[in-house]
Every structure is written in structure tokens, then in C-alpha cells.
Amino acid sequence: MDLRIIREDTDESKKNVNERLYYFNLAHFPEDLRGRYEEVNLFIKDEKGQVLGGIMGEVCWNWLEIHVLIMDESLRKNGYGSKLLMEAEEIAKERKCDFIKLDTLSFQALEFYKKHGYEVYGTLPNVGRDFDHYYMKKDLMY
Image (cartoon, rainbow, N blue to C red; front, side, top):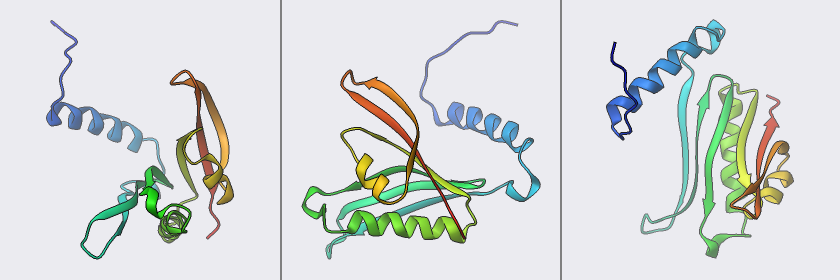
């Protein structure tokens, strides 16, 4: 067998690897959690339909993972980020998620997430030489 490592960016190869991991994981999760996957994307738009902020994540098995939360600077400190986060938390509770996880950098939204009950469970120092990378979690009660 002639095997090679190939660097490429094709949807087909990425889909193949992701599906392999999915099916491997599927064999280890309880029956009631299998097949639980749903994207959760919420946006703040103006009257012209322009996106001014949003939160993007996914329900996976028994958690919601938040990948992105961003708000246009002109809207920060007006409660829109909190509203997005609370709406995502409600969706997670409706889907019977046990927790939400996310990550943030020290110059991003650490205090914002702490204010909303998220706790740091891991830290990676020296990211970009000057920052810390925080891994956070919030347990849900539903």
C-alpha cells in the first residue's frame, strides 16, 4: 500500500474526515444522544437587513457550543450581546443541553461571559505572545 500525506482544501476530503469522526463518536454515545446536531445562528439586523452582530454555534449531543459572538462596536454596551446570549441559552435549554461551552481571548469578552455565569475551566497562555485563551462553560438547569 502506497500512502501519502497530501495537503489540500477540498470539501470532499473534509467531509470524509468529519464523517469518520462522527461515526466513531456515535458508537460511544448513548442512544438518546445520537444524531443530535443542530446549528444555532442568531443575528441582529437593521431595517435594511444588514447584519450588525450575531451568535453562531451548534447543539451537539448534550451541549451547545458557541463558536462566534460579535457585535458591531456602535451597538456594544446596549444589551444586544446579552440578548443574543440569553436567546442561545434558551434554545439550549429547549434542546435539553446540559451545558454550553465556548472560548474567548483575554482581549475579547472574558468579563462579559463571567457576568453571565460562565466559568473558566482551562487557560492557554501566550496566545499571540501577549494574550491568554480561555475555555469556558456554563451548566444549564432546565
